[in-house]
Image (tube, rainbow, N blue to C red):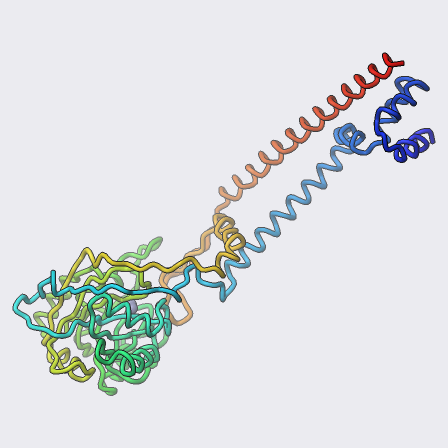
Length: 432
Ligand SMILES: [Zn+2]
Ligand SMILES: [Zn+2]
């Protein structure tokens, strides 16, 4: 009752603390001065906040809010991690390839006396599969790096190759010739089917020897050639597994038996010398390729041929006749173009980063992708209980630190208010 009266008086008083305290002090000394404090919420708050009962109620509320917040962050982070259609973190749309490499000016062919007029990349990907460059950009990257011919081999589809060929015929006829193809991609082998105009069906993800033989036959029926790609890459041990990246790759001898026409003997900066020796001994096609996906890479290798003209047919005639050599620069061309960070990705980045952060709680490896919707190695899901345990540990350390600092601030505030109030009271007392 008494405090209600006081609150009314203090609330209506615009001249603040001094007036009220002088009034109450003169009336009732110490006990009323406590009422004065309680009548002002910002003075009442610090004292109440560390009364045990109120403290624990408040603590439980803060704790519940923190747990809910962490749960929401985990939900957003891990949810976005498994969401399709998240924009790429790089924006390739504005890329320029405005340099001109002349590899002939500093490289000699593997067969030094070889004469050539065509510099070909035998393996490249566009946005029709997982390459980052669209048809036009793919042509411009190749022209910048000294090529005047390219075999476009998107994964499991010839559509990219046909689209890039159409653009080249229309707008780049004097600069670069395109030969369409596709990269037959599965868990056992990658093969380029080149100089074809229709997609050869692929599947299953782990084909039998018979499936592979049928695919090779089909390419030959379409008039195309079969080149076995990047054997060293395929046979390198997959991280986390005691297995090759493509388990159960057919042997070179079996592949020759099945009728493949040649092998990719230089892939990016890797010269596959053992396979090269076999192709020499067996008079098979020696193909080379950049396997271009991301454009911020060097060009390392150019297949060279001396074609009667710059048509697809003339170039293929030379390849079929095994009249090829190659230029090889293991260090790669120095010029690079880099994509800019994507603005759309930047917008989501603070949320997407949570997925990376909470991803430390577990690892889920599946090995190489089959490019047919599956993965090539046994899935290994591991929950990192120790990391989760330490996360909880650090959350509790954080809570304890927060609560201690909070109490310290409240107590200091309270002490300061009491002192200040006492000093004011003394001054008022003296004034009277
Ligand atoms: Zn491949
Ligand atoms: Zn490839």
